[in-house]
Amino acid sequence: MRDTSTNPSRGMVPPAAIEALLAQERGRFAATHPRSRALAERCEAHYLFGVPLHWMRDWPNPSTLFVQHAHGAELVCADGLHYADFCLGDTGAMFGHAPEPVARAIAQQAYHGLTCMLPTVSAADVGERLAERFGLPYWQLAMTASDANRFVLHWARAITGRPQLLVFDGCYHGAVDDTLVDRDPATGRTVRRRSVLGAVHDHPDFTRVIPFNDLGALECALADGQVAALLAEPALTNFGLVPPQPDFWEAAQALCRRHGTLLILDETHTLSTGLGGYARVHGLQPDFWVAGKAIAGGLPCAVYGFTAEVAARMQATKAAAPEGHSGIGTTLTANALALTALDAALQHLHTPQTYATMHGVANRLETGLRALLHRHALPWTVTRLGARMELQFMSETPRDADDVRRAMQPSLEASLHLFLLNRGVLLTPFHGMLLCSPVTTEAHVQRLLDAFEAWLAALDLA
Ligand code: PMP
Image (cartoon, rainbow, N blue to C red; front, side, top):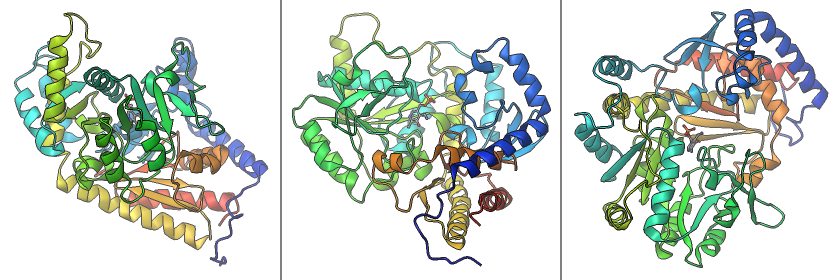
């Protein structure tokens, strides 16, 4: 039995022990995934980095894992192995893989047209359902959350006539160049995100970055009246999980209003908070609201909603602009399949019952993880946002991206991911995020908890 008083140096594993475990687990993966390996070898010939999207190599496994099929909260790989999936396509499959009502609706629509560049008859229902579920009267669609954010930024700058954008340090809003900037911790200035390839425009000239949860910095950034919009997730979910301080959003929202800056909430991930998303659950009133990924059950589709006042400004701005390309929209946007999937998802997935089930299983996971951390006296935290939670190698809940940066242990994290993958549990590759779907079961949760405890034991932490 361990002493349960936590000691901050516990959880600091010698790098050599992590490397040894990683080497062992890479060998285990190679031995148990011969079919995936063979596919990886074939794909090397025709795909950059051997995958159709290079991020698909950002997993800790030594060669790509190929999916045979995914259903509910499980995925089966090319070698016939089953995984309890807590990554869920990094949220695209938050409601489970191939949710039945969406799959059925897509299959039916597929025989009646895929794309026409005209709205299908379900558009009227979809508009009403969006307004009712998310509380904003006006809507536009996009194909992906990245697209939706890019389009909203065009609108925001166009209707305010202001050039600047404000984001939080550690943000991610998709492939949106304006937002791919960082805050230099030494000077507090906005700098290019160094990992971005082929950047030629000076986005730091038009984007300001401030620490999350910092109302003083927000006030300073807005003071000159040049900021068109604050684009933010209600909680940072792409740099660890950083929840807002109590009352942060109420004050931040008031500051935005006072300075004529539009508030854009990107709820692509925080939809996990509860029915209608974080803003709905907590009574926030953004000017624009964005969601993609799971919004239509995982079929490519994104939406952005806005207030009547903003809609009037958008209409006036468009009417006053010269004829021609607006820079907003893509040909396949709101195609027949996307509208159909969205309609089915709004009726059958964005429901109180779905969220109750999803949150019930997330409660079980959170309690189980906390019990293990306590039992083994580990000074780590679990941060929770509805169906989503993050295991963080730090003793306190972070307040901003710098707190997360200080606690990062990438190889420890990689060893956890690979160890669990080898025991039939998938975690999101980029961080310690665990997402529960309405079809995640107690057995999936138990599999994760058992594998987690075995990993602790393998590193001599249990
Ligand atoms: N917004 C947020 C908050 C996200 O987390 C992401 C992706 N992780 C995006 C937007 C972009 O989504 P997509 O890659 O589907 O365009």
